[in-house]
Length: 287
Image 1: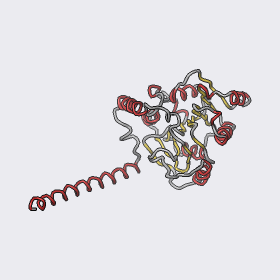
Image 2: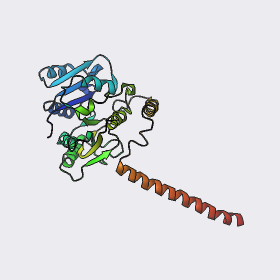
Image 3: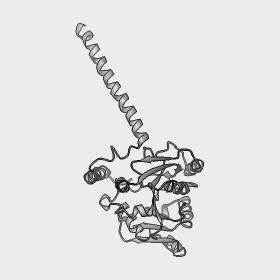
Image 4: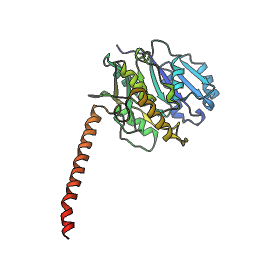
């Protein structure tokens, strides 16, 4: 039976006064349908939202005194979710088209082996990537509404899920340690929780009939140490799990097929170039 209880956990690290009306409306609509824990930090704690939240008991606004980072903020919010609610982690640089959350929940309860599901997006190339490009947000929303419908073979098993929009069964989430806060302020924390879920014997699934618009990298666009953070956190993940998820864990079955095809093509090209080089040597010598 499809659960009707989902805890919406929204990462709010952008000043609300700079958010577009469409985003605020989207958040309000989702809040009125599901219990919502919003983590606000620093200048994101706008009085207007605090007053609005006080009038809606289905919304819990957590005002942090300091920036807890992505992992810390998510863990803090999850402490307030009701025990029988599944957990939906959603970045604030997203727009959620019609029926996206519905199809995520359908995917999560497709069978008992599935521990977490994620949607497809327009940002970051992998098996969760949808090659669409529009000039305005409304066009992405319209595309999502067209995409988020019943679909044959909509579910694809994968080795990891992106944390931008991640729906986890609550009983599965409770078997993990949550987001490992050693990965603060971000990067590879979603790889880690994906591996935690898989280590408990559950599967991860991408729902291709759930498109969610994702701007991407809004929290890190002004930082100049991203290369150092990524390198440090990749080393941490390898130390913790014994392998590099960037090489192995991100490849689903379909990705392995594509990877193998291009690897074979590259090998054949290399052999052909070497053969051509060997054949041309005598003619150069004779000349």
